[in-house]
Image (cartoon, rainbow, N blue to C red; front, top):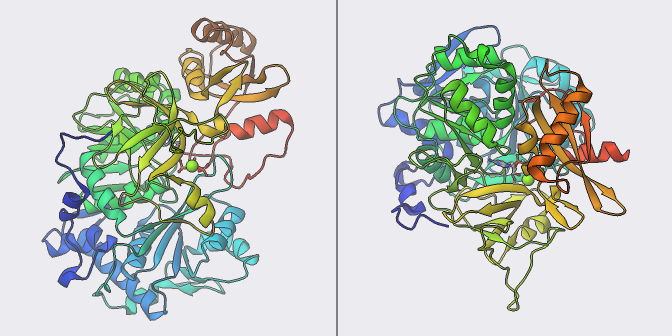
Length: 572
Ligand code: ATP
Ligand code: MG
């Protein structure tokens, strides 16, 4: 469903960008950094860096341009360029921005990794991405990278921040100091590979999705039209650059839009977060349901004294944002959370509650300008249904759910799954990109998330999306969070089970569960309400904060957990 009344087109969005000087093509890092310097915005603050230790420093666009030039010069001197992949394993500090954008200037592919990963997931990704270089800190090298490299056949060059390099690595400090502060970006085609991102691994092993420089067109357009970024905004994206949100909307989109980005090195802490929103004077905030739920758990007192009135726009992505969370934001904080939807593969926001369009609580919004979306009828096992003409069947009934499909291509669409060409080809059908997510579309075109195709539960003839059941459970005052999944059953096919995290001080678990069961039966009916509950302290989540229902199912069946590489104790 496109905005037919909107004059927007991707061709128009391209004109918002500068392009490399002298018709040299399109380079993402030029649009994010150098262009602002060339247009007289070099003294504007690009990054406001908050350290774990309470420090706060600023870096201007001019300084970032110079540092990324030096870094690109270092890579070029080392013979690293087109066709090479530069991984970055760093805490959330300027090093990430410098290395990612510098690598893009040198036309290498950049891949930031989540610094909280252990050696195994790091090794897996370095292997799939055939790393040429890893940029890191001495501490992370010693603690994780060294072990990760032990099993690799092809060893990357390891560049370590600062002047002292552990054995087997090279110190970046002296190389940067020697490099020229000017750098001429070589001619770059919009189709040149730029960013490599791994999916969260919620449904299986993480896949490496490759994006090209042209993606910056989507980042610029959605930065403006979906996040509403404009001059003098102070913006905070809470996602780590190791996830696609943290790069596309933590690094690229805000810089392309020329705003100031706050980068917080520390992990989630409710009091700290409210303090940042207040003291850093954030005007636009992009976060995730898992974080919003943790703020809900922390209670309204945590926000006492924080002045949030400058916050003009707040958005959420990554998982469904239930209506209860939207309503909580409104009543407890006076913040309107705008849910939006996209994937690692789409490279940018595709569906959104955007500024100026009324939010429907619990809906992920409308397709963004430039994106045509539809629903395709899909079998329970995930295969597409076809009409007599052999083509997929579009779902038009608002009561019927279908697989969300996007008309290909768009600028930030992934161009490959690394090493898996057949899998990539299977994602496309009749000109549509198949997302693997089931949604419903109401009569006004708003999209409502139902389930991942892989998570649908078929029980006694009913098809149930876990999210609708979780939404009802989460509405119970004693439930902080829940996850619903199907467990095979000889009679019903599957039965619905639920794992719940209870709010502290909610009472004796047995009595509370009886009340939650009664609540869910009265709202969902006995056929859909969970048959069995377990109380857990924490839901199993990927490091990017997504609930891993497959793991709960596997645990209950006593099966091996499958890939645990993305599952480590904390999240957010
Ligand atoms: P994998 O593909 O490896 O299983 P993943 O799909 O979790 O991992 P991501 O690309 O990080 O990896 O996540 C995209 C998915 O997250 C979407 O396909 C969707 O299922 C879910 N998602 C993202 N935003 C929303 C949202 N606003 N509402 C509901 N679901 C969302
Ligand atoms: Mg996925």
